[in-house]
Length: 299
Image (cartoon, rainbow, N blue to C red):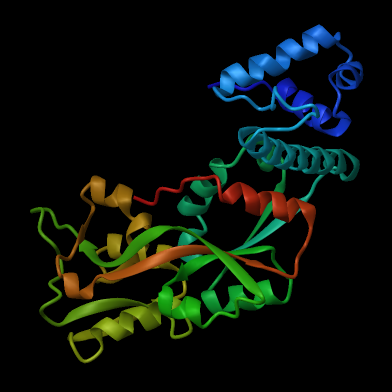
């Protein structure tokens, strides 16, 4: 089924005027042409939208549903046009993102490519931060959105009166090691190993500590907030690190890195985007609404 925009405009005009002749006049067509367009709309839908046996102009149940949808479309179009007009006047609108370090490169660039063209005209500012810093920036209004890892337990602790969120996808934090010249893992998690770790204030450090403390024997060689830095050290053969799987997909395909097959040490995480409810800017609402219509794939 294919609906023309002009039919939606015809329907809204007819509902406002309650008269075919007046509606046709407003739409700058003859009454017969206007009537044909309404009939074409009904044929495309497969339902009658007007009660033909009524003395007054009344819409059928299908017509009422279509009217509600048409009004919603009209509001969204008007809001979008207003935003685009504002863009022309002010040259650019800036949307500020706080993104956890490990999601700030490959994942974030893929995330932005999924949006409609008019969203891509916005100026994007990115601040790489750890989870705690990101939430602080969001609550203080220093950024518009926060993209980070979370899980159901942590979501329940977030004040839903202040922040709202949408899930973007799933990933796993996995232990990885370099593959040696013989195609074998360089390090064995079941024997004392060198650990490349996150800094103590990093969100992923707490997750990893929960699954390995008092269970594995290791010594920490290096600490950082940045998963990408840890990956560089792993690729140099310096030790084992727990990395988000979505950040090492290419290295796994090229057989540079190997996931250590130990399910009890693999951490499932979800990726969310958060927004401060206090911010009511039209361009933020349009961006947020567009998120609901996008299917994200983090496989």
